[in-house]
Structure formats: C-alpha cells, structure tokens
Image 1: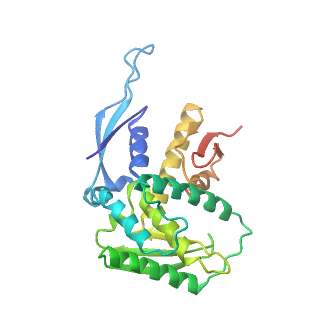
Image 2 (image 1 turned 30 degrees about the horizontal axis):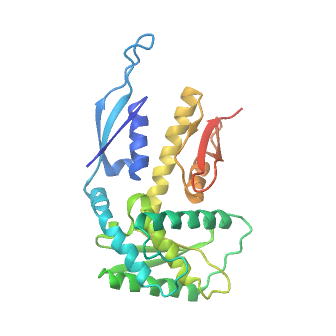
Amino acid sequence: MGIEKTGKTVEEATAAALAELNLAEDQVDVEVLEKPKKGIFGLGKRDARVRVTPKDAAAETAQAEPAAEAAVTAAAEAVQEPEGMPAVDETQAAFEARVKEKMDAELGAEAGPNREFVVDEAVIEAAKEFLQKVFKAMDMQVVMEKFINKKDGCVVLKLHGADMGVLIGKHGQTLDAFQYLTNLVANKDAATRMHIVIDVENYRERRAETLTRLARRLADKCKRTGERVVLEPMNPHERKIIHTALQNDPKVTTLSEGSEPFRKVVIELKK
C-alpha cells in the first residue's frame, strides 16, 4: 500500500513521501496523480500530488511491522537486568518512545569530539551473546559482522539474514530499541562505556543516503523560494547527517531548533 503526498512540485511531494517511508527513490514506484498548476492571479492554482508505493523488498519490511512487538518482547525477555526494560503494562509504542528519548540524550552526549574511544572486546562479546539469545528466542538465523568505526567512535554490528524487516520496524524504531537494549546489557559491567550501533541489512546506511538526498532537495527549495524549510523531528545522529550534507553549500546554512525529542533541523539562506 502506497501513500499520497502533495507539494509545490512533483519532486517536493516525492521527497516528502520518501522521508515518511524512510526509503530511497530506487526502492519505490512513484505515480503522479496531479501535476502542479500555477493558475492566474492565484485562481486555479494546484499543488502536485503523487502516490509513492514501496517495491516488493521494501513492502516486505513494512508488512513485517506487526511482528516487531514480538521481537522487542523477545529481546526484553533475554535480558536479566531490569533497569530500562519495558514495564509489564507498557505498550510497544510507549516503550519505543521512551527508548527514543534515552537514545536521543545518549547520542547527544556522545557527539562531542573529545570523547575517548576505547575498543573493549568483552563488551562486543557481551553484545553478540545477547543478540544470539534474542535470535534463538525468535527462531531466526542471523549472521553478524563487526566493524570498528573510529571516526564516529563506535562499534557497528551488521546483521544479515532472512525476514530481517521485523528487526527494523516503523521508521527504524524497533531497531533503535534493539540497539538501546544491546548497549544496556553489553556495557553493564564495563569500566568504560562503549557505543554499539546495530544495523540490519544496511538500513542505517540507506537511511543516511535518503536523508542526504532529502537535505539537498529541500536546500534547492529554500534557494528557489527564499523561505526557510523546517524538517520533521530527528534524533541527533540524523540531524548531523542533514548538517553534514549541507555544510559546504555556499547559499544555505542549517541550524537545530526545539527541545528533545522534538528537535528539528532548519534550512535557511545564508545572510
């Protein structure tokens, strides 16, 4: 099932749909329902309207979302440490919202350039053991790859397997919950906290590419209209992607406004 979006141009409407779906342009089919009309003296003016539908692979991810609740439950049951776990009467949505707030705060605190990065193999092994327990409880066969990212000061565990969409969830919320729980367990007895990033089938890389394209499209809109553009709320990591994508643009600048977890990036013309 696709979604419909409107915008002053077909490109703007498509970009809005891609941002909501968290998909790249090559992962969707775009149907132009109405082309924009300028009108005369404001009469007859019409925005563009498009229907954007995920292709088969992307659709499988979307269809897997109902199973995300079971995935988070399995992860929580595999953890012995009660702190940070879902409350008995807490819904999946409420838990993921709470996780998002915690992750936003942690990502913001860890973004500083002076934070020392120390690779602790014991922490990595603890993370792998926890994930293996989760996948066993879910009866899933998953291959894990480890990457050291010194630039961002983290360890990335990339997960590959069949039907992995269940681990991503809507807008990556289930994946963020997995990542939070993994960090909670793996760093429980660590002398120095190490940040672990969980990625599923390169979802985070694709998300970064989508956000980069979105940033450039909205920057073009800002230049064309002369008006500032306000994006949807994002966590610190995703806001950094937007800032980085436009940091060398000679005509626009970016800034963040608001408070977590509703902080947004704003694109405006340089003065």
